[in-house]
Image (cartoon, rainbow, N blue to C red; front, side, top):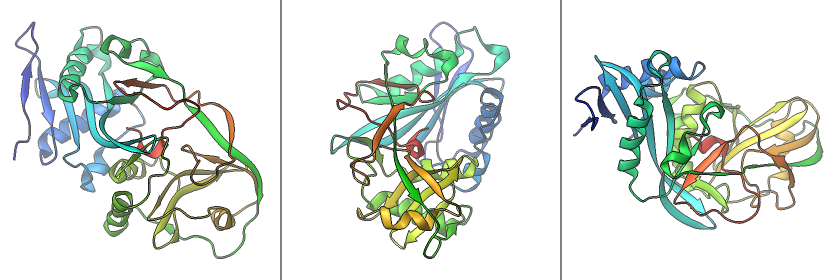
Length: 299
């Protein structure tokens, strides 16, 4: 199996772009060393140890002297747009180590990544410090919306058990539900994004994974008096309301959703713009009106 391919910078024979793929542990280790140098709180090591890096994820890494100094990763995805499955890509981990910035290395990585994407739809969530970088590659910004509802919820019934995503059997079942279940939204979302969700858990960025039933799992937790429901992995749609009391250990007055909740709560309110989500898209027409790409499907 091919583990990596090298591209040469058109203006120089060095550095090189190495395409790090599934089944390339040495190259993956170099990539994992790069990530926290650029994104201080982000780490891929545990996700790799769990074996969650699949053929869908490729890192286009600029390598100099065996060290990754810049990168643009590509996740192949099944996007869901207005009820249709759309094959596309999402970029992530785009950047350059601090001491090599200003040399055009991130651009080299981006060019290699975009060549691999071709004319397919592409999206990314940008770092606020580089919002002017992506339009150079044909990306345009799109607003993201916060959704929620005012509702008094008190603990009741049997609490939904918390599942340990560190267990291989739990991850396998989560990926299975992502593969076979209903999309969390039909407006603008994703399908089969189980490995992205496991990355959030591996990096300690995820809220607890709770089991409502054998066929319905949710990432949800309470913060500052609000129940945040980040994502739902379920074989079929269901009435979410009776389960809210099983997801709280203290009374709450509001519920917020990490996705467009038209399937789960048609009357949810638009709370305003999501100021922390700087979405850019290329070759990807989006539906009119407010929407929120699921937070657990973002790379």
